[in-house]
Length: 206
Image 1 (cartoon, rainbow, N blue to C red):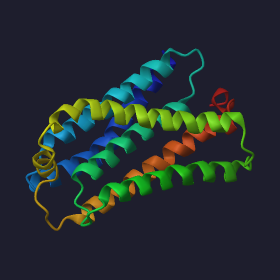
Image 2 (spheres, one colour):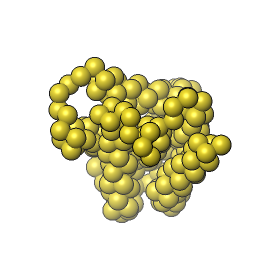
Image 3 (cartoon, rainbow, N blue to C red):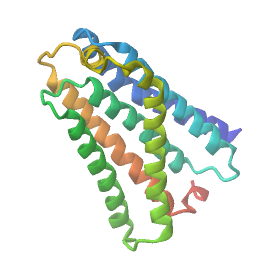
Image 4 (cartoon, rainbow, N blue to C red):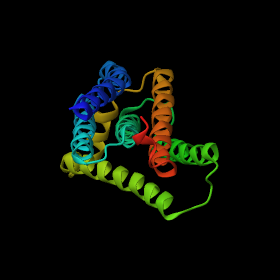
């Protein structure tokens, strides 16, 4: 029961943390006449994976809140980065590339920062496994989202992309703020998941 309340609290906090920048981006997209259907699908994928991770981790005998927090922040950062890549008005043409670089940089920085802070720079099997888990969860989220929207792109890619992005208006500063928040979320996700690796028994003290 104690773990259930803790898990429920973390899920609620995670969804609330995600909803603020998501709704800000959705409002701006609506202002530019973009198709909010994609925003809704991204949000649905995020909430689905957040709840799924809560169920899976909650069923384990040894519950570590750090790993759960890492999963939550990973999924909400992926959702926001996908939203920025599809609908963000960053004022540049290669925003997808910018999003990928920013996300990889945030994850990498989180991993390195955790290893430096704990003075455990040696690459071990557990560290590699943790990195593989992050990559695997990222791929699973993106594949689920692509499967959900892939059928819409059939034969009319240009028209669909125009509906997704909407009109171009001078609101880039809002999207850069959302991008910064997303990078912080990705950093926290990597930090939390790597902390489980370098201090696996810490949850017993908390």
